[in-house]
Structures are given as C-alpha cells and as structure tokens.
Length: 139
Image: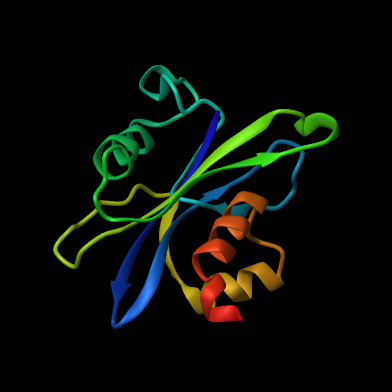
C-alpha cells in the first residue's frame, strides 16, 4: 500500500499545505507533491526512498494523529494500476506546532495550489488529495 499525506497549517487565517518540490524521472520540469508520498507505507522506517525528514513527518504527524481531517484508502483500477491502493491522509497542525523545513519543502496557500494546478505543476496524488479536502467548498 502506498501513502500520500498533507500537513496543513493556518497562516494569517488561510490554510497552507506543506508541499515538496520534486523532479520525476523523465521529466524536464519539476512539480510539487504532498508533504509525504511513498510507495511502501508498511515498513516506511526502513525505506531507502524516504528521507529522514519524511520518516519523521510520518512518525510524528500521521501515525496515530488525533488531528486528522481526512484518512481513507482509495483504489486505482485498470491496466497498470490493478489492485493499487493508496492511503490518503491530511492532518492539521495547530498554531504552536513548528516544522523546520528542508530545502525542497514550502508552505503553499490554497490559492497558490489552485494556480499551480492550472499550470500543471501539482502531481496527480497531490491534486486528488487537495480536491478531496476542499470538496465541500467547491459544490
């Protein structure tokens, strides 16, 4: 099972999402993704694909979090996605919780993410989770 998670924090009364700038293999331009995105959620502590910072985010904010605003498993079906499952999670930080960010991380506001979606600079997992979290506001 894969895992995708956003950390969300309010700055000046606006939700901001912790995003990571990445360059995917075969791409010429980088995109933004969620706070954490891994193909192996079980055993993540031993994963060589995750940085220590990402492992810390999972341990500290996503595992057994009481501040989850979304937690669900979704399936991708058909073709190469047969039996693919992703655990999507979003957790809200309180105003006192601080996160020291490495170089590839940035807090993006809702409007910034919407603008980057229009410019095709947000990857599919981040777009999907962002849409789920904000669904009630769009209908």
